[in-house]
Amino acid sequence: MIGSWSLRITVFASLFTASTAGAQSVLFSDDFESGTANWTMEGLWHLAAEGPPCLDDSFPSGSHCMWFGQEPFCTYEFAGGSSHLRTAASIPLPSGNGGILLEFWSRSEVESDTFYDRRGVYVSTDSGVNWTEVFRIGPPVEPWTLYSLDLSSYAGQTIDLRFTFAITDGLANWFIGWLVDDVVVRTVPEAFPTSCFGDGSATGCPCNHSGLTGHGCQNSWNTGGAVLTVSGTTSPDTILLQASDEPPSALTIFLQGNAILTPVSFGDGLRCAGGSLKRLYVKNASGGVALAPALGDPTVSQRALALGDLLDPGSRRYYQTYYRDPYTTWCPPPLGANFNSSTMRKITW
Image 1 (cartoon, rainbow, N blue to C red):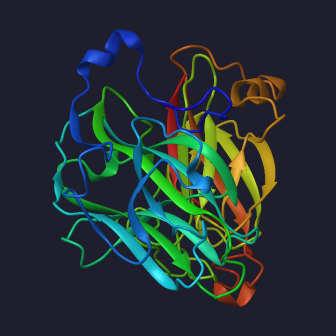
Image 2: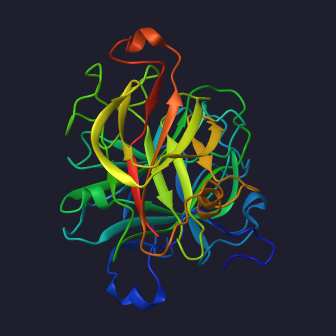
């Protein structure tokens, strides 16, 4: 188990309470204590045990995890390209009104400019022919951290999962790399529903520049379109908003609305958050990822209250980001502008 000195950060906490925990069901689980039969590995991905100097802190559970790195150097030197840790068998997901979560523990260390060393989680619905990035780790250094990703949009489909470490150059690869443990896919009574896709499944994007499936409208950096992830709990308020697949350092505004709109053109993207709009946070993305609230910021509910919106229990709010994309020629006026937007999430407080 994790040592007492380790910083345990639950970035994406469970979305159910003790009273409803019995409604969950586990669809896939692996703590890596019984070998690697559930996975295929490429590059430096391998089963690691506690012991090497760089792994002397305890794992979240047991004594094994998956590691993109190498003994005895405790780095990912001599590696290049993209290497995948992929489920060996597909996972059928049930349909229904509940939510589906992917949870995993992660510890990683890469160079400070995360554009060059990327840690992403991907989903495929066609047996690995095509993949969609559903999450990218933002900070260059993280202690053991529990992530919980909402896969509810894939309900009723059969998916494959992979963890991808992508190295774009041979410089500054002397860090520990990426460790993954305790991977679980499970159902929960309710997650945070996603909508306002710019992938062509509903309203077209202003310049017909659709993003990848489940993303917002494509941007000039060709990231596939921005995705907003919501995680944490509403009581107490530990909600974390994360926008990924934005331009590398895009100025990002986190927006809250109290009504849902039919998608309307909004700069180079689409907006579905409406009603009384509140600009909760303004952040700069790092490596295409923007987080709010940051350490020291007021919580989402505190920030909303300061802006005159009391989030009573049971109230519903809608969240999107819009971010600067300065290449006006990408989607020129009058159709577009120099900003784009992410997908939208609903939170029931």
